[in-house]
Length: 82
Image (cartoon, rainbow, N blue to C red; front, side):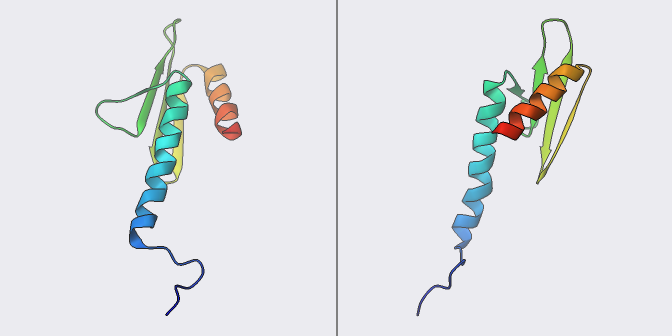
């Protein structure tokens, strides 16, 4: 019996999203964001001038909110490159 092409074991399916999120978290931390202690999918960046930017990941969606428009645009560009 041969395994059909494109077949993935149950364990491999679970590893892929975890690996993606691990890489994503590394990128966010390298951009100066910190993980929330209460929710590991929430990333927070406090700027020197008091402005705040938040990014929340939910399944395959992200929401970015904050009062620093330049930071939000910069984040979008950098995530597009990654």
